[in-house]
Length: 260
Ligand code: BGC
Image (cartoon, rainbow, N blue to C red; front, top):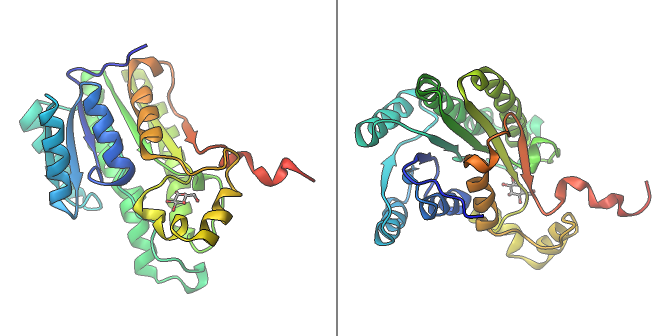
């Protein structure tokens, strides 16, 4: 079965690196027009756009910090101006923040993680839904994490933001379903990107991580991206309001392979 998204207009936030980049490239391969939002490294965004164009696709880059609702509105207006609307939003921009136990966490760091991961996703979803509800068509897919269900010492802002994203997904899905708009989340486990480079780049960190993954390997960004394409396509036309885990079994709690 070949999945096609020809003519669909997509925005990927944080689309110039890691999982976001992989999703942007995979959407374009399936025929979607892709707007790549980014905050830093414009050259990375330009390179992806050029690659997509060289392959015969359509892509634009949109600079802007999605934790600011005014900037988000501007980003969506730019997409309207270019393509006349939007069909797919991939809420992907996110940070994991400074590692710190909750009682020592800097409040501004904590707030920033929530502002980007949760508030930013909401601002984008809000703009997308205004448009999708009125056209009675569209899909929102947010990049969550296994840490929407697995606690993670030192990362209370991150885990809280992702748990919030799960309920945001469910509630927006319920609200938008009568308008033929699906709202989903995708929860990667340990995927090889710069966000967790410190861990997979040192042997001890890597061994520790692999013990947490039943498939016993780190995932590749394109393994997440391919699932993203499935979820935003009509192949998943009856799936909404759920988080789909792409985690090599991490949320299967491999410690329970023995004892209990
Ligand atoms: C984090 C990664 C981490 C993975 C598994 C992700 O949400 O961004 O840094 O390796 O969860 O713990």
